[in-house]
Image (cartoon, rainbow, N blue to C red; front, side):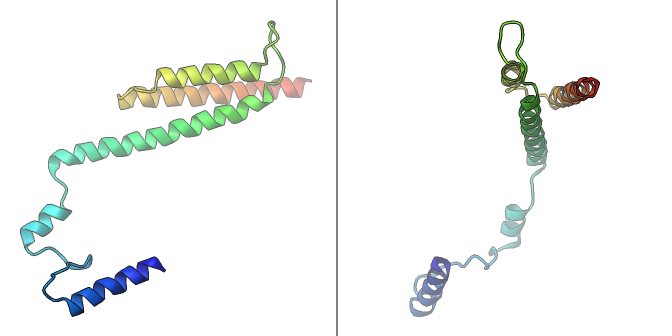
Length: 135
């Protein structure tokens, strides 16, 4: 509702106050150079954009892996020799691993860490399933 009111105010001002030249959003730039400058990506920024895309995708993958680890630890309900549940130990270890790798900026190393973490998670779940079948 508020968007409609603001839109009509803008139209009203443009019609009744022509001395104030308000540029609407749909009006384009004045010159071709302005258009190109606004919409074309510079070569130096292309690498930065690609790095940001990779960072966000690896960040998403890391969060997904962390959530999967937390979900999988629900099944580790027995205590260790000290009486602490394996679930808590595994969650704490996962948290410290992720915190240690938090500021890693090399995409190759981040990818290796993600692949290694995913493989470790799958092998732990497979071993848990085998033990459950043996019981």
